[in-house]
Image 1 (cartoon, rainbow, N blue to C red):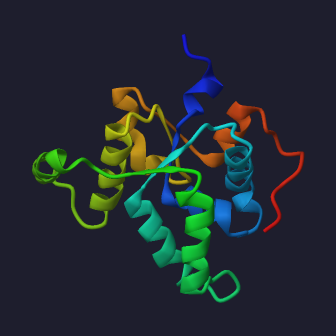
Image 2 (cartoon, helix red, strand yellow):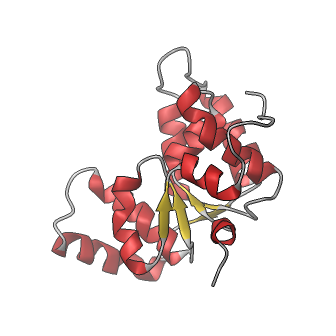
Image 3 (cartoon, rainbow, N blue to C red):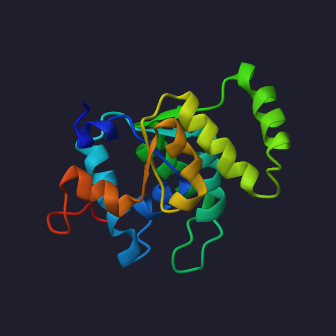
Length: 170
């Protein structure tokens, strides 16, 4: 049996965790920030995220309320230094895109749900055994195929990082 923390090696991090891990959004961001500390220390191996998540990070980070908002150049620099340099950025293989669209149509995936469905498909196609998101409800279908879905706080507990200890400066 795989040790629970081992399942987080190469975990897939969703946009919500990228945002909270890279922008100090206050107390709710603490778990994601600790995960980014773990990434920097090599405790998660080389995590994965989707190219779509990088674009979504940029879109959201540059439109946050003024006190949190990043300039587009700062968002790009942060993505380059903290995500592109430390993560495997993956996408849905070209050969699976049509099948993904067809399945989404059969399953009546409508509106913005297509984005989380796509991100879940990318995570699964990349071989991730765990998805860390602060929107776990959007990824519950992955659990049926053996992918662990948990929020950043649960991932922090699983890694034994707790609430104390040093944090990366914002």
